[in-house]
Length: 393
Image 1 (cartoon, one colour):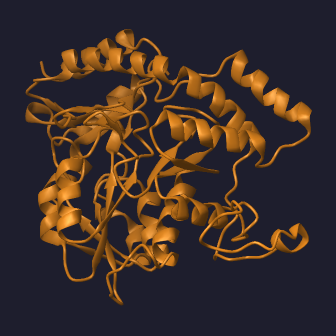
Image 2 (cartoon, helix red, strand yellow):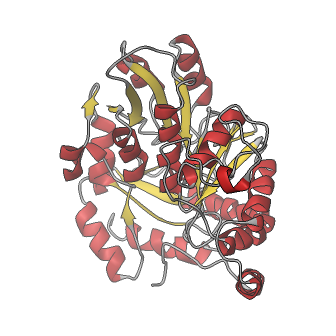
């Protein structure tokens, strides 16, 4: 591909760190994971971090805590629903349904592509218990409005920040605005640990619950002082006492070791992404034939990728545009799931749709994005612009 979606950011440092783990003979979750959790939490201004094997697993654990840790949701309802945007990722939604919440879909903003706070307010009912904010493609949600809505209606705010590592809203990192925030370390993301994910929270009890859920539901990873289970100090017993309905979602030491290397490089990676975004905005901003993703005031996008919504002369011509770009070796993909309500998997999910979804439908029909990564993309972006401009004349 002349312009691929992803880019390998590894060099000898990452490879050497992985080899050291292999040479140690200890491969599964251990000291490196614990070190990475501590440094990841500190880097993003959070008190606690739990590393898991993927961002999807992070979402699963986040919703499992909401379901099983009874101290969190105080609202009494037999049919709890969680409001979520209709444009996101599949495993942002599945854990909601899998944990016996109803997904309450609302439309997104056509400008930011994120959940529309006005639609959130309209969708709240007596059974609503939480809001899931998905920071799409590196772009922060409007947390000022979402926090006000949550506080006014006694709702829990949680974040899926899997695509937006390093993004900030009002100088505070995304993934730290809600009760919990999830992150992905998949190979095509801001930090690449092969597979991997992290949940951040400032709540110690929630972090302890996450640690138990992550590994079989046992209590062995809990500190001596915790509010979930009083240990006997007999390892023979304590290592095999199960206190939560857990999973097996542990990360590997290799992933954590590589993550420690990547974390040191993250600021440099982000600066290159930002430089690429300026080139992108100069080329594609204020054009009559496309619309680019806008940022909230006082927010800083981490520019996961570069999204375009075809407008004007190119509206409803996406099929031909995509063919042309692919023919010219430019790798493209839809704007995440498009309108998720159009996916056949809905027949398996417990959901409802609140309001109209005109923006999500427009994104579904006319949206696509190209890659951004820590490499100078001036040549690639100019090539993309040239190929699209050819369709105007």
